[in-house]
Image (cartoon, rainbow, N blue to C red; front, side, top):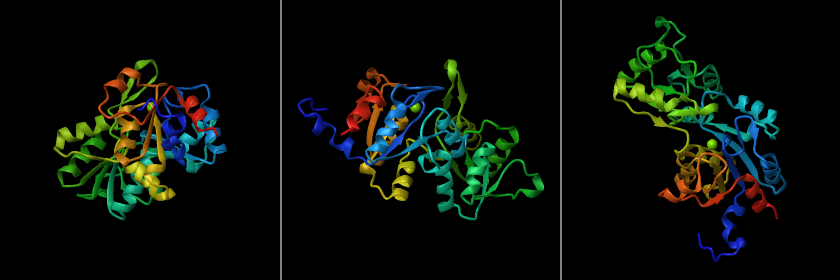
Length: 281
Ligand SMILES: [Mg+2]
């Protein structure tokens, strides 16, 4: 970035954004520890007439679960402020698989989310006689309730020519103490190994989620700012969608990773507290 620019010039694109898409873990909090100034940052967005959506690739929980969690941590949050890869997948299905049978591998929360978008879903809980021989689509999420029958049926349907759609490409989900859980991308890798069929992913870094929000809110992508700590999801989704990107150094990325990155974020800030200072008049 040109160091000779005044702060006014440097932050013009950032300040012009009217909708902020916010990553949560590593950006607003880590586990149950809320970062200093994070709630105040949300209040600053509200006070300056900007809107915001908490955006997550995690498809194991429903939007409702995030509302409960964010409120418990002290963040303002209404239904309209949350968008998950599961919700994006529901919207995608409503448009591309309306009325068609969809075999779903995902948590009960994910299934409920898809059902709320009118998806005609079938699951491994049905007995063999109630299941058709073919379906239109196999749809996979981050399934923390996975059983072998899910995999067996998904393989059957993919080999019979079903389309393969998945909520989010993450290989693992980070857990406290440096542990990880196998995430949606790893479950899909197993299915690909068994069938040769590769999924189309809906979540970050695919531009789908930003495009869906842009369409719904009638805000062009160039006026949307993605804030997050992961270069290959939070920042990449902004770059793929032509939105503005802010990488905060409060989570996964450090300056060395940004220096090494081929595509740089538009802005690199210490944390959302610094971002709030920039957005305040
Ligand atoms: Mg994060």
